[in-house]
Image 1 (cartoon, rainbow, N blue to C red):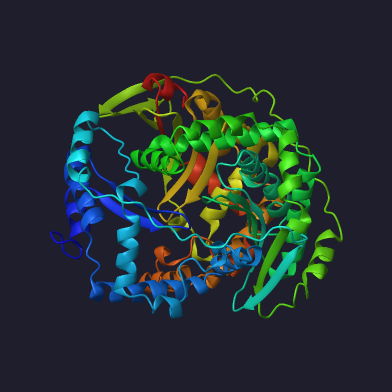
Image 2: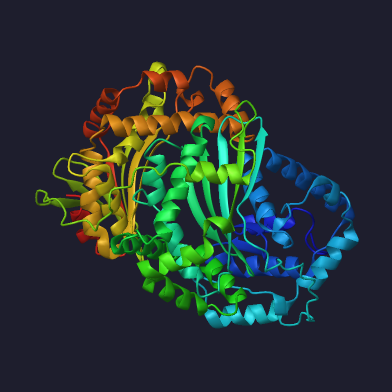
Length: 605
């Protein structure tokens, strides 16, 4: 609170003006944001300015909030992914503050007093250390005048910084390994390497390495680990706070498959270092990253966060330099940075296994031997998709009515096509129908979800890899889901790719192949996801509560089904579901894009 706004009033006033707010802190910055309609801008900004300049660090409120934070810290210890990841940061760093448990631990948190927090607030919350970004339907001159009025008179002073110790250099590199065990059902393995900060010239290439490895279903880790049923989840990231970076590969797998899954991921990174990545793979990854870059501008919140985060790094214009470097990186550069930063001897691995499982390795040397013992079969070479499979000419659609900004068309068969023109670089297409998991019989729980996910594994015209490559070369994100009452397939792409995207989405909705191999891969993932849910201290209690609250009703069942219903399921069951709930249903197409509505509607014909 502040002298003029009591506890809870900041959120209440923001909500009363039609908005919401949130805040967060990570390793190198703290952010606050409010999202409101333009009519609430002045009131919302006044609230934010008051909170920024006049916060009261009330001792009793601090004590209550500390108890909340301490409980959150305890829950984090119960989160297998968080525990493994932050243990990796500790393993990789001997001196840097990155090695500390970010949220703090109970003993240290209980020593915090009002004076500590107030001193931090008064030192860092100063105009010269703060960026304010405003994006939306507001007059720039009026907004600047209001900012000057609210913030212009605030006192400023240099910020006193106490940087922690830097990492020692010069020591001989050596692979690091730590193994943990606990009351979990799935193993978590996190590889890591130290990398440079975001503004380093090698960072765009390292980010592209991560995209080649794990962005999309055509990526190397997805095909080489998940598609081979070695893990339920696998991804990579190059996390780059202000003065350092950490490149990670994260795997969730059954304990008996954990080492083979780690070996497969390890091998794909070796392929990157050895120069096996093709020009087509790099092009696919660049397109995926470029489209992801554009998606952040789809909302006012995304644009404001983009401007503020880059301005903190020395100027929002630097974002353009980073993007240019990213999109000009080639396969040779990827191999070069992987060799220099992601070499085996520079890495580390944290393995967190179920206590009931035998140890994976007794030390780093033994784990290196297991990782290098046997190379998995190589992946099929990823190539640029050829021309799209010819399809029948689009049939006409007719305008039915106009409801505000939405134009409703009808196909010749009567299916509604809803179109809204909205400015932006990304277009969205979706097919929606009533009836998701609530249509599953109790003996077939999880059927709707399995059908939706497996439909993305290939069609009668496109195999699994071709489908993934076609979508990702469009810069697209293809997804499907089955909630209790809704079945949906969606695809978002840069607007210039909308015609090809419509053909691809139509192929997925109308002609999924449901091959046995794809079905088995998705069933393995579903079973692993059920096991992971039981390790989650939030999702599992919620699942139990939901089952009790909706006893005997479809809403009480897990969208994933159960171990027993998944074991009984067959590809024929998926085909039957698709026939009844997709081909024979009364679905609707929704298109939101910056294009002529008539042209957009014609894509659904």
